[in-house]
Length: 113
Image 1: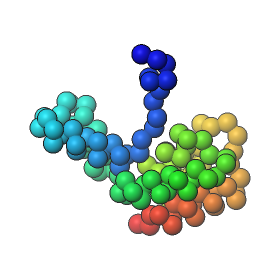
Image 2: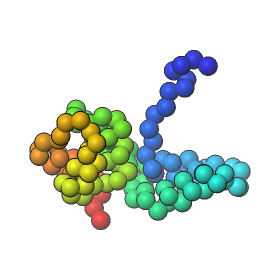
Image 3: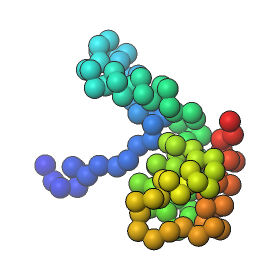
Image 4: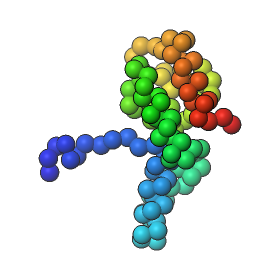
């Protein structure tokens, strides 16, 4: 296999749920790990794949976010500044107040409790 064939790309929790539901329909029984992942995704994914993709697209327009951060935000749907700070706690450098507000504005536009 070529190296580029082995590259991975992140997927959102809502995509995981859809993928595993399709696999479940095809073969009836899922592997243990797949069942656990499906249960987790059913509990914690709060948006449809379409809405999640719209959110990811809009977050991607922010030049200060990396791809893995965008998917983390789309999965966790942070609602407060502290939520955002927690997501970025292990990252080098800190987000400014305006950057945090932009993220929260986009998330709230796509998801409100």
